[in-house]
Amino acid sequence: MQKFILTFAMLGVASMPAAAQSIGGTYTVSGTNFDGSSYGGEATITLTSETTCTIHWETGGSTSDGICMRNDNAFSAGYVMGKEIGLVVYKVEDDGSLHGLWTIAGKDGNGTETLTPKK
Image (cartoon, rainbow, N blue to C red; front, side, top):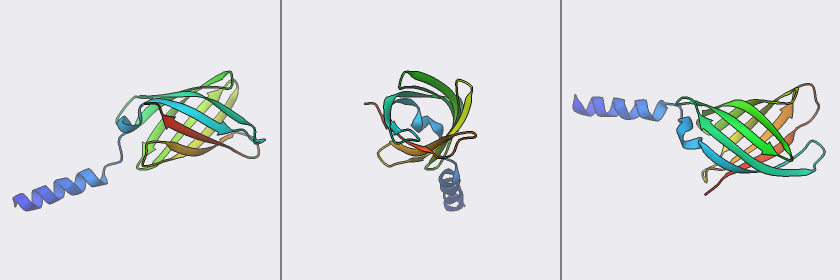
């Protein structure tokens, strides 16, 4: 019986979504705009629950804020920058960096962005 309970408990932990807790912190931002020009800055991810968070970017002289969520190695955020609404979807890499693509509602194309944890 104890072996069954231990196995069940281990399966339960393995099937839980990855907590946003491991993703909170400050990141260096490097990315490309729709036209291929580059930008940089900083992003801060603040946890709001076990799987959700808020994100704040300061890049290229502008700021934007959004909500975010992690599920395993997928991390996504919806954001507002001025009057524009956008979406970014990242893959969480083993080294803790996030590599993603972003877009803005009603626009063709996408940009790229990498968030690297600050040490």
